[in-house]
Length: 242
Image (tube, rainbow, N blue to C red; front, side, top):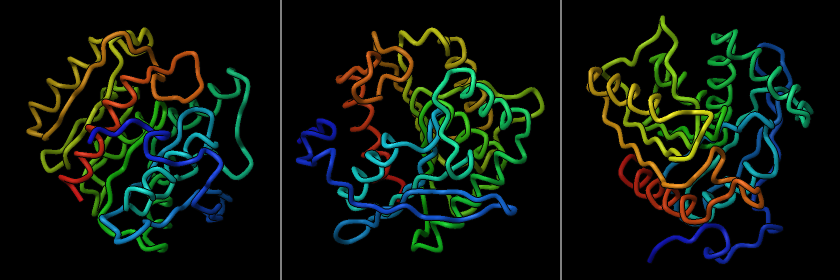
């Protein structure tokens, strides 16, 4: 039976299964969101937010994963209470981390550590938009100990000039919109070449007509078919790697 997103899973957008979790990284107050697996746990998923910060969108995705039998934790890379609304503010927050990638990695790892305190063991790390770029930053770093896989949905795909993918990198799933004008297909092709050369297992899916942020519910950019197909593949990816 195909997955048909949140509604087809019989879940209510208002029925939140998880809870807010406070934690810190180098003295910085952070606020994540955790939902334990419903039923027997199949594994754990760490979710990295888009450039809005950790909002209701990531909470919904965490709850979806929980209902599927995964412990799920959405990390916070911006800091407690920092959820930018204006475009320039969002650019400023992402810019801080793109310009300090060591801090970006430290914040991701702090979130993974907190998830492990809550019961996560082997994990898959996934992210949306900015979060997808952050996922690939972790993958390239070689610091993802105990990470069984990486997934990025309409995320940034460029590799900084001083970075590359280690040969022992866990499998990567890339979900990309064919109509994404912000992240061109040339970036997708370049990434595939890098991963081939590094002998990293990967799967790339491109969805025709899907713009950037095609998975964001209730957005003008939302494309149901692309969202459902990418979620189905992600579900299979989780089953293969957890």
